[in-house]
Each structure stands twice: as structure tokens, then as C-alpha cells.
Amino acid sequence: MPSVRKDLTVNESILKTFLNLGYCLEPYTIYKEISCVKPGNVVIINEGKTTGLDLNTYNFENTNKYSFSENTELTEEKLKKAVERNLTADVEVAVALSGGIDSSLIYAFANKVNNRIKGLTIKFDDEEYNEEEIARIYSQTLKGNHEFVDVDTELNLDTLNRILLDFDQPYADSSAVNVYYLTKATGKVTKVLLGGDGGDELFNGYPSQTWLTYVYNLSRNGLLKKGGAFIFSAAYLTANKIHRRSIKRVSDLWEDNPQELLYDWHSWFPRKTEYPGGSPFLFDTYPGVEIYNSVFKTDAPDEFRHVVVFDYFRKQMLSDYLRKTDMMSMLNGVEYRVPFLDEDLTEFALTIPFSQKSSLRETKKILRYIHSKNYPAKTSKAPKKGFTIPLDTSLSKEEFISIQENLLKNGNIVHQYIKKDYIEFLFRGLDDRESVQSDISRAGIYQRILMLYSLSLWNENK
Image 1: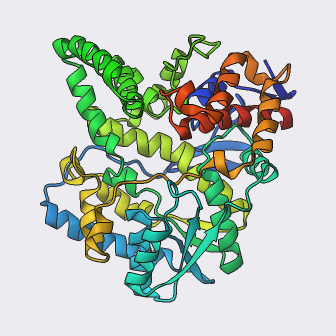
Image 2 (image 1 turned 90 degrees about the vertical axis):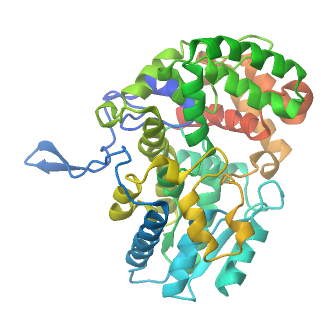
Image 3 (image 1 turned 180 degrees about the vertical axis):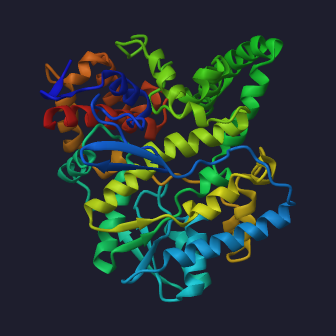
């Protein structure tokens, strides 16, 4: 087992969950002797003695009795107040403006307070990821102050290494690159940035928060469980390459037990991954499921649809999304604020009935309605886009060859956990994805490469 120094030991169980999830699951860290402070807790050190103080917990069961229109009105009121509170600063404040509903709402309400507040948008040449057009519509609608940040010409392997090593433990969400450049640009303007984080988690912005509930309920039926496996198999054989990935993913979840379902859904590198060499993993992946389900277990609600919200809020947002914005903003000397996670708004949002927030046809119903009062209707109906970077085109071919050489060299820690020929298989997929592996998306290929590279880089520099 690798070690850092005499008093720190690598937590191999968390290392293995990282190889599924792409992040280290709080309150655990990659070291056995170090834990994160739990959310809503304060650690008090007095005369060498350490005690914990739990300040608040949230109820994830939907309990309020207001109508949709009443909850929409109350949400708008609380969000406005949250934004106003977060604009209090000794310096000018900017807003991270993506093409999404959440950040543009922050921008709209901040603009009402200060119509010169600047919106900052990441710009890509790759049209699949570029949100320039819709962000421009937002700023023009409000007649607001706006600036684009172009990252395509700046990213190189040295910068990627700096970003990954700043996390002090393996971390592999490629959107950290976006946040790095966004906060770097912010630092030239001001030292305080508002972001839209938390809106999806609180108001059902992920389609999966709704359809996972349906998959779970349907797959619990014995007849449907058996019939579903047959239907998915038949559909997979007749589907085109584009649809096969979705069919395979749902089919794998369909066969999951309740303990496995959310862990497997949140994994960038799922336990059931297969390639011509079988499973790529050289370890038992099931303990990761058990660790995942043990985290904050005493706070978890009973009903599955509320567990879905709980998992996004308490696990993925905490260990991945907020860690990313916190680490990257600190690296650039910027304070990153999240109005959606204002205590009053958060507590209220969790009481709103699940059905008022989303349906199979529409996510984030309440926020979309508020959005339509501030922006053109077509922008309020736009589907969710992840805040990611086209890493495969942002780095040069030579830089990917350097990453490949690193991961394939003898003695690399990655070889203890992942088959070496699967690493080669991934790099072949970068060059010829459609013919090599239709069951994994473009982003999925480079995210897995990034996960393995992050582990290797961390091990070499720990």
C-alpha cells in the first residue's frame, strides 16, 4: 500500500471509489488519518481538545402545502434576497454567466441591483460546448455588462497538471478547467464571483432526478424486472450507435438493487464497464457501493425520490461541484459565492413538493417560470447543458501522447487497479471512437483518461 509519510496512509478503499466516481467522497479523504469537516458543522479546538458542533441539518422530505404559483412566488422572493445579500462586498462583484437557467437568474437579479455588474462567460470554438450565443441573448435582454473568456488557446498540459495537483488528492472533473479560467479572469476584474451552483440540486434540474425515480419504481416490479432485461437486449441489438449508450446505461441500472443504483449512476467509470478484455477493473468494486451508502446515512430520507435529491445535494455537489469551485477560486485568489445555497432559500426549496419541481417532460419547473419573466421564452425552455470542457480538442495530440506514455509506463500506480490494455483501448477510442467503442461517449473517454491521469499525477507528487 502506498504511503505519503510515516503518519499518513493512503485510504485504498477511497482510492478505489475515486476510480468509479472521479472524486474522493466526503467526509473521507484519500488519507486514512484525515477527514473533512461535515457540512453544517464547526470544529472547536480548545487547549488541545477537539470537539464538533452541529449547527444545522436539512429535512429532505417535501412538506409544504402551498400551490405551484405560491411556491414560485416565494422562491423568487427568497432568491432575490439571497442575491442581494451576496452582493455585499468591499469590492466590485461579478457573475459567472453560463447558458443555463441558474446562473442567468443570478445575473438577472444582480443586474436589478446594479445594472453595471459584469457577467463572465467561458467561450469555446467547439460548438458542442460553446454557450456564447445564449449568454449574449441574456446580456442583451438585460442591456447588461458582459465579457467572454476564451480558454481554447490557453490550455496546455502544464496548466492541467497545476489544476489537478491543486486538489491535493485525486480529482477528475474536467470542468475544473473552466472554473480555473473563469476565476482567473475574475481576478483581473474583481475578487468576488457569484455562481449558480445549487439550483439543479434544489429544484430538480437534472432529468435523472425524475427518471431515476421511475426506473427504480418500475424495476422493483418482478414481471417488469424480467421483461425489461429482454426488452433492453432486443433494443440494443436494433439501435444505432448513438442510442446504444443510453440503452446500455439504463439496462445496467435496471438490474441494480437499490443500494447500487445511485452509485452506478454517479460513476464516470461504472462498475459494469466492459470491453473486449472483459472488466477493466483489477479489484472488487462492490465495497465502493457500501461506502457510498454509508455516507450521511443517518440524515438520509426514506422515500427513494427524496434519496435521489439527498444524494445529489449531500454527496455529488459537496464532494465534486463545490470542491471544484472552492479549490479553483482559491487558487486564483477569488471568493466564490453561491446564492442558491443561501440558508433560507435552501431550507425552503427542500420543502417544495417534488412534483412541482419537475416531471418526465420538464426539469426545474419553478425556476424556468421565473426565468421566463426575465428572458425570452425560448431560452427558458432550453435543455440543461453541463459546464464541461472539450478536453480532447483543447489539449494537443502531442500532449495526449505524453499522458498516454505516463499511464503506460512500467510501475504506474494505475496498473494496480486497471488493466493496462484497457488504458490502451481508451486511447484508441480518442482517435477512432465510433469504430472502437460505441458504448462510451466522447466526454466519457477523456473523463476516464483524466481520472487515471489524475491518480497517476497525485501518486507521483504526493
